[in-house]
Image 1 (cartoon, rainbow over the protein chains, first blue to last red):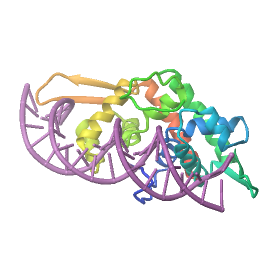
Image 2: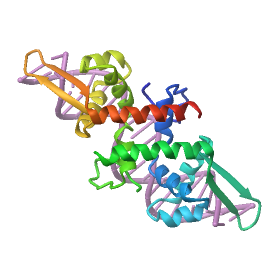
Image 3: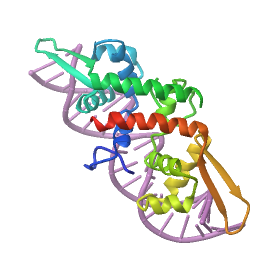
Image 4: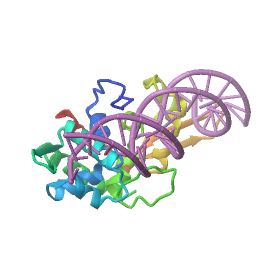
Length: 107
Length: 107
DNA sequence: CAGGATCCAGTGCGATACTG
DNA sequence: CAGTATCGCACTGGATCCTG
């Protein structure tokens, strides 16, 4: 355990840390919760999170995809259209995140 | 949701984010896991985490105490002796953290 | 519309030294 | 032994601009 960022390549072989790091970005919970309600597109996420920069949203979205929580469906059209949705693993994660919320309520 | 640090005073009224932020320090999981095994002192944590700076350990311990996950018992003696242990809320959090670990194993 | 590239500020944490 | 103070760097994420 100890140390957790993805820039310095590192195994991070503790599953608990992997999981916590995976959801530790500033907008990741917001994104996951939104997708938990249903498929949506980047522009939707931008609308729901007006405070977030596009840069942060796309980057964190990308990490969540990499980590297997989110599926990306790219319709090859112009203007671009891309849809994001939770994978089964993502839904499982949301279950645990809700449990975390219960603890958070007692803080 | 969105934004999470404790320096910029901010309600952070989303319980899920409160919880995630509370365990998002570099050594917090390590500390919690260690205490989950039993009461221990700062120097023990230093021994178990040789890579961690004392600064980080004491700071994150302090936050975990503030957040109600850890109890601090200060024997008023010299040389100093202080013991840390999980509170009931801390144990509850460890339950959820273990669930997070299950998800982490599938990543 | 999706999403890179750049530039810049804020902050997390390591190293080290010091005190009661 | 517990805890604080200082310095310094690396990383996160905001603002803005650009392209297919």
